[in-house]
Image 1: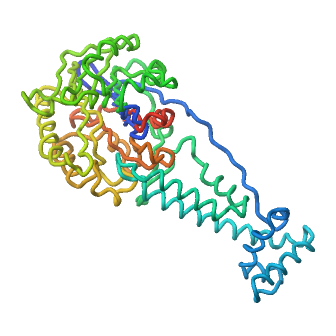
Image 2: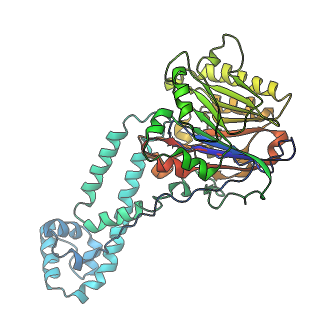
Length: 483
């Protein structure tokens, strides 16, 4: 997801009068998520999709006439309460009850059947909700695991079949169900989606939760971060325009993760960069080609650039996971933290080696200047940061080991989570499982961050997520950019 961070600067000090940070959406996964940081102002994008509409037809005896009578009468004859309301006998063989009800319907005038309409409609609504609830429960059981969508197609087919069986005899009920499920489709991130939300939690809405822009003339730097999950695929997408994104967000620095490009591709990619962003720095995996990879693209020329942690022979620096640039007032580190993997095969490496090494590297840099750490940190730190915490206790990105390591190596060492500081009690995600369609129901994870040195935390003007980007390019991405 795109995430943006904006800092206000005065003189040569990172006095980010406000540091906008945008957290990338993971469900778009262009190639990951995008996060942006900017010392200055930024405007949020317009809605990309209009609300969908649908009509529902009220169910009554009148509007059922003309339908297949055998199926309809069989259904209503099973409702003793309805027969009683119509003044018909409620005991007897089902065949006899159906015949009695059919005779009553044939002889009823529109006015006579009005009394039954309210009760029938109520019964229909109740059944429709029950069906929808069962479907939702079945879907939830299959779309939670981060990076694991196995069995999703099967579950979806089963759900559709179940729906048809239960409502095939009543087209009106099917229409009502569709009307309910189509709400908030254009901006699903504005719906509070969480298995066990606390009382004061709210859904993240960047249109209403961002501060006013910085005063004109305020010195600032705007940084955006995005896990694009394959830069080449993103650039080939006809609906994507890097120029439009740059014009809309006006970021100074763009941090990319999971570029998946090789060293031989860098010069070609540089030629495709838009005008004004003349300084780009690329770190590519050499241990596994077409894997991982990070980059920083900037219109501000940095004082210095570093790749990796600088530890000679370290595995950490073989996968292209870290690029660091030095500006006048702060260091910016763009990182793509290793995923613990299927079966948590890399969990021990992640928490015992990687996190500790990165933490020590940051603290060493901090001795000379404040640090801004951004990127895909592959950890939903708290239960508010993931839709289904109970179902993912042993999923990569939400294990107790990873969450504890995140706190011990970063937050407890003086780094501030800018989004959470600005938005306590707000549920905002940056990643959604692509195959499970989790983006449409906002069942996601917050895995992309801006962590800043405590000394400049007060200078962060804004830290926000760009969920509409992930939604607009959902055929390719599972993440949103952050600023």
